[in-house]
Length: 116
Picture (cartoon, rainbow, N blue to C red):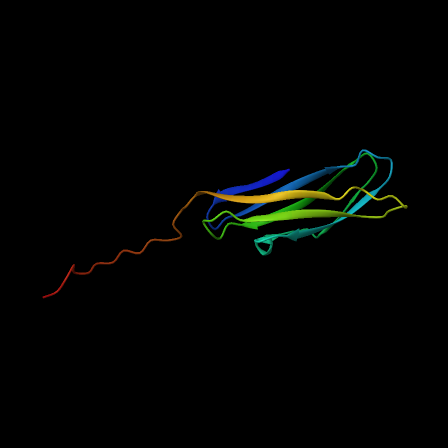
């Protein structure tokens, strides 16, 4: 599935990925970011998540919108064996879109149009 990061230029957007464990075993995942713009995305609360049986786990992905062009990366969650049980590898497409541009500041100046 795709996770979209939309916002104003130069703002930071945080998305929370919810992971559900429907099994009776604990699952553990390590997250990595790969792709063209992977360096622009981060995992502020760490790259590991442990999901108890029949519970939910969460991992945060953060992106600061620095450019007008759309950024793309892939979040890969690789399972670690816990109690001899492996979970499925999960992948999420990460995409950004600038919805608004607000000026950081304004400068007023006065000068002649031309001089003889």
